[in-house]
Image 1 (cartoon, rainbow, N blue to C red):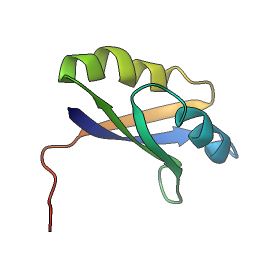
Image 2: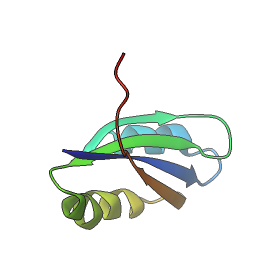
Image 3: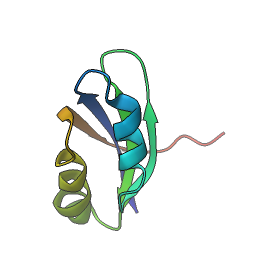
Image 4: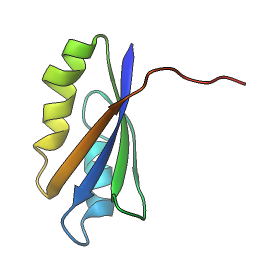
Length: 80
């Protein structure tokens, strides 16, 4: 499985609602609303990088109220 974090900016005051809506989308593994330069952070996943780019990322980006996204594919996971 290929995973990525998406950092999302939303319209003012919409972060909590958008995070809850994003959590229901296929391919969204987790969704949190946060403070700082981004409003929502989601972890997404798909079987391949192509599927992630073609299916999951566009479904997140098309949600109403999202103004900007930054997708950060996970290169490796550190385990303790």
